Image (cartoon, rainbow, N blue to C red; front, side, top):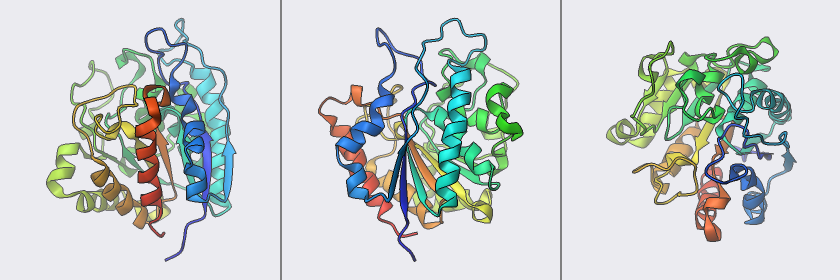
Length: 301
């Protein structure tokens, strides 16, 4: 067992979200800086820290395709892919701090340049929808579809690398949003070929057993796998600082068991998304998030 060399990649993009109410833009862009100010970077003793600044946010209400900021997301994804690729090639374990879930495009593109990496996708929502199914036009609610090749080529086929990961190399865990979406050509996630385990199934099978079984199904050990963790997978009573809170969700102990199990299988890197400091007065949720990350990343590789 070896201690992982940690690189933090700050990805403060909010391009994939709709601004709510009178907000000029979503507050997720402040997450990396807030977590740094609260001591995360120092406590993790990161060897390397880089910030990939996004283009300016636009509400983009006159969009030609129902994905806000589509061109800006595409441009940003390529630059984020550069940072992820460079970190992995240098032997680092990248911790990518979002930002919203659309940063998954850049992370998976960076890996697709090197290998056929699998994806462990942990999220309170499936995010497996096409633009015509979205009421918000937020790419952050379509990211799992986009990285698996569903949706407009402006985001699904960057550098001619469609798809960045195939559905059969994806395990989607912890979803508890069962309201569905308008019918479209995309299959339901349970019929997509992914290893799909909603929250209730994780609890029925046991967290560790479920994660290992899902990773086996997607052949995660063959060329490695990436972990996406949206903090809205956490119970909203514990993590209220998200844009789409829901009832129930993982508690911190369950989330730690999930992530620790995955890390022991040799993940290539981890991204954490959707924490919004503007929805966290006093930063209690942010401090809890830091304690969780420090604890689980202490797990040796």
